[in-house]
Length: 180
Image 1: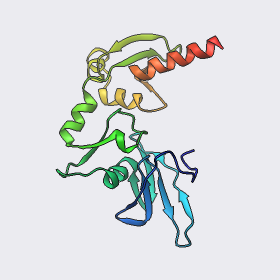
Image 2: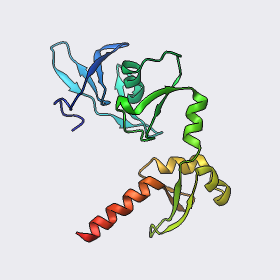
Image 3: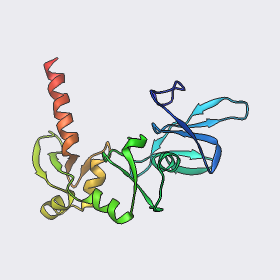
Image 4: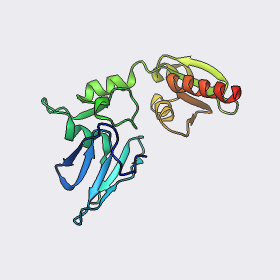
């Protein structure tokens, strides 16, 4: 769907200032417009931090920054783009906002509840208010725990880690699958 050239509902395209033959949409899609008028939606990949990223003229560009630069005024020249719902893959303009580095770090490190699961059975072992609390109690670096919570490979320190909201969604999906 994301690579389909059909227009999404209320999708607006804007030229990327540094790359005039590329456009970014308010839904977080990026396309290349060739000289002959043909258009191609770029296929993003996740960088090592979990951000959708594209190549444009031999440079690596994070999609959320392209969307913010095109659609969100940065009146105070703030350096960081924050995902309001903390989902790095959700690059819709309404989910993004400019913020200071300090505020961005504070938002990402405080109060994201996480769960610790058995690596084999996925049995819930414990719930923590934050990765910092899990680090204090388990001795596993919070950076590693947070990284596990944003990747498909969620194994770290002999445990599986998930954000509490992702875990609850996963549990509900398991219940639906067993009910069917």
